[in-house]
Structure formats: C-alpha cells, structure tokens
Image (tube, rainbow over all chains, first blue to last red; front, top):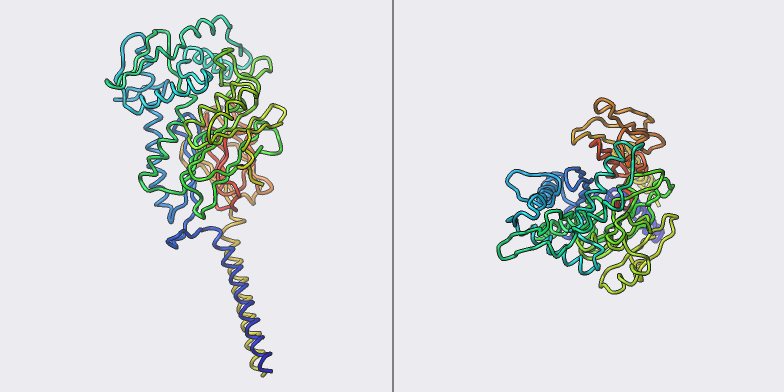
Length: 362
Length: 125
C-alpha cells in the first residue's frame, strides 16, 4: 500500500511537470534566452530609402526600443554609403560618384576615403573576374538604363539600343583611366566620355562595411537583407544559423523558394537574376545585367546565387558568374576559397558548385 | 489509500487542467488568430487587416496610382497594382510573422505582424 501511494504521488508530479513543460515550451517560442538569461525577441524593420531597393533588418533584442536603436544606427550607416555611392543624385556638401562622373576629363575630385576604398575594390574585382565586372562601364549601362526606363514607361514603344551606339560607348570603358590618387585622396576619370556605374558592387560593399561597423559597436544576432544581398552578423539568438530562402526566379511558380540555405556567422548570400529588373521588347526579356563582352544582357541563367564570407565580394561574384558560361563559372569558383555558387536555368534546373549543397537545408 | 487522497489527486488534476486550458486560450488570443497585415505607404500606416477576415481592398495612393490587396484563407497578396514593374503582384503570398510584400514604385509595404513564425529568417529577392 505504501508503495502504491509513493508511485501515485510520483506519477501525478510527473504529469504536472510534463503539462507545465509543454506549456512553457510552447510559450518560450516567442522569446529565446541568451547566455545571460535575458529573453530575446525577434524584431524586423523594413525601409525603402537606400540603394533603390527594399531593406529588411532582423534582430534579436530584449525590447523593441533596443532594436529600434540598433536599426536606426544601421539605417543611418546605409544612408551614408548610399549617398556616397550614388551615380544619379547630388547631396548637399557631399562629393560622391556622380561628382566624379560630372568631372570626367575635366579634373580630379577630392573624395572621402570610403569612396576611394570602394573604387579600389572595384579595380580588384575587375582583375579577379577578368573584366566580367567593370565599374567603368557607365557609358554602356547608361544607354541600357535609358532604353529600359523608356520601355517600362511606354511598353508599346520599347526598343533595343542599336549595337553601333553600344560599341561606340564601349570605347570609353577603360578601367585604367579610372585614376585613383590615394596620397592626395582624389579620383579622376581620364576620358570625358567615361563614367562610373558601381551598381554591381556598391550595395554589397556597403553592407559589408556597415556589418563590420555594427560589430565594433557590440551588436550581435542581426540579419541584413538589402535587396538581394543578405548577410548575417553572428547567428540567430538561439545559436542556430540564419536560414535564408532563395527566391524562385520563376515568379509564376507555386514554389516561391527554389532553395533554402543556412549561413554560419560571417557568411552571406547574394543572388543576381533577370527576374526583377528588366524590360521586354517584342516579348523578349532584357535584364539589367549587361555582359561587358557582348554589350547585351546575359541570357544563360535566370539567376545565380553566391555564398561566401564577404558581402562585397559576393555581390561582384554573382554578377561575374551571371556573365560567364557554366563551364567558365564552375572553373572560376573552383579556384576561389570559401566561395560556393548555384546557377538556376530558365527551365528551373539547377547546377551547384562542389560544396554548395553543404549549406542547403531540408 | 484514503478517500481524501483521491480527492487531492482529482483536485490537483482538475486545477492543472484548468490552468492549461486557460493559458492555452490566452495564448491563442494573443497570437494565431490575431495575425494582421499592416499596410504602410511611404512609412505611414494606412491600415491593419486581420488575416482571419477575407477582404479585398483597393488602396488609392493618388490619381491613377493604386494597389489592390486581397486577404483570403489566412494569407495576404497583392492582386493588382498600377506600378510598372509588377514585382509586388508577382510576389509570393505572405502569412508568417515579419514577412513583407513591397511595392517600391508606390512606396507601399505590407508587413505581417503577430503571426506564427516561419522557419526562414530572410529571403533573397
């Protein structure tokens, strides 16, 4: 009888423990405890002010106020780089990339070292990608930009720029005429018809710099998503890797995501594709990524995604791979450390670099 | 075992049951069914649409500029829009916490709040 009593009490206690455990487990989904036992909640903010795209910041903090404070620092930083790297707009008291372009063939412009470093990086990427990424190709991209704007505003009259115009403009894309004087802090374009278009690297470069800045400020567990550029500072608050969905280039498909990957601390994912910025002429799609060799939009892939450890590099490499054949791209990725890639064809089939699959989840 | 022991056991079980039921109800009221699509235009809140109430609303921003949002079966989508790129119309349906649909030309953002968590932290565009 005594045994029976003891067992009954134990069973009841166990039952209560299980019920409370289940309840608590369900409830703690909303907040995650960190090492110091503070409950961290997930917050997200979206803004549309920088790099002509949509930005999402996801963070894990103890309160909305704390997150808002971090998010406003990040937004401030991104805006700073946005203004410096802008090729279309002037800003009061700032000499930016547009200022450099406006003074092409005229005189060197004294600029902030954050511009000089980014342009220097652009030159490195030109060398690394054998010219597949060329920030000095503004003259050609400008023509495509005008035709695309025209085509989007007036789809019936959409047309393709004449090859002769593009070839003429291509004579003014020599990256060696981008003259950077580090000592005096000046940049000069030694060709009046030349201009910079840093669209293929500036966003990724800025994200990387802001991420590093946040790190020095002691921030952690933040996911940056600036257009197609995704980069993680630390991990999720529960120590798990950030889980990233790669959008399906086929927007009509029932599957919104073509792949899900996870990124470890310091890794980033960047996708380049022909499915968001493009215009159509006679039913044919012309995207915004222009192959420096053909002077026409690259057509081999619907999208290319790169996973690596530097957002700036990822941005440049995804553009470069988009402009290469699959064979060139595979060989190129093979040569680089810590770079993996996925190519998506227009029919939805995929190719992966050697170790890309290690990052795939599910 | 005495009679009182049984009363105690039944009493504890009942009490636990009530606590479980009550907290479940409170939890459900705080999340799940309370999921809302918040629409902002140029950063200012335009309106809140509960995901459990089917509705189609044409949001007029200015002369001839509009987005049509539709809520049905617990999801939210943009059905139609005046923007030239139509990225928002092609965007996947949203239903999970923090998911957004953005119409950049119209500066309109739909954000899901107070909903269940997805297993995804972010998505490339």
